Length: 116
Length: 116
Image (cartoon, rainbow over all chains, first blue to last red; front, side, top):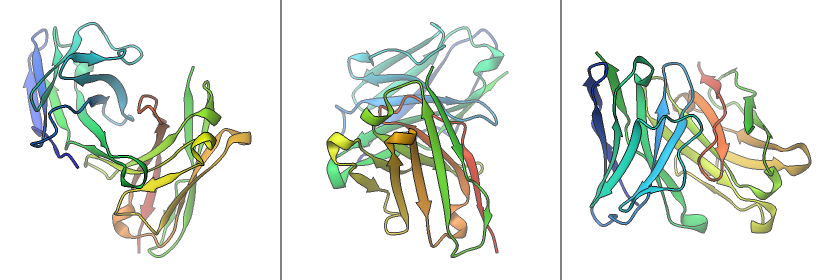
C-alpha cells in the first residue's frame, strides 16, 4: 500500500501563495490523492481530488478559486493563492488502495499551515 | 444538502464497548458506501473501516488496528450507519467521523475517550 508523506508545517504571509506537497511512495505514481482542509476544532472538509493530469472531478463545496492542484510523478500539490486568515488549517492528503478485503485508505501526516 | 451526524461518543473503560451512530440525509444513503475515520488529539487521520451498499452485499473491511474488535453495520430504513466498538483500548481514544463512500462529505465527529 502507498505511504503518503507531508511536511509537518508550512507558513505564508497574508496575500501570498503557498504550495503544499503530498508525496506518494515509490511505485504509486498513478494514484489519485484527495486533499482535505481541517480548520481548528472542526472536522475535515473535502478540497479536491488530484491525479497526474490535475484535478479529478469537482472542487468541494465552497472551496474558493484560489485553491488549485497539480500532480507530477509521485507528488500531488495543493496551491493556495492570495492566502486569507481563514486558510490557516491543517491540510491532509489521502489515497485509497486495493479492493475487497484488501482495501485500505491511507493518509499523510498532515501539514499545519500558519498564516503570518 | 448532505448531512452526516455522529452520536454515541462517551467515556468508557478499557475493555468496554460502545456503539456509534451516523445519521445521514440529503443523498441516496442506501446506494452509498460509508466510511469511518478517527483522529486522536493532535494527530493525523486514521481510516477505521468501510461498509458497502446492499448491491455490494454490505461488504465490510477494516483497518488492521481495529479488525476483530470493531464492526460496521447499517440500517438503510433509518439512513443510519453504525460503528460497534468492543474490547476498547486507550489508543482508541479519538474523535470518530463518518463519511460518504466517495470520501467527500464528513460528519462533525463524536469523541470517544477510553480511560482507566
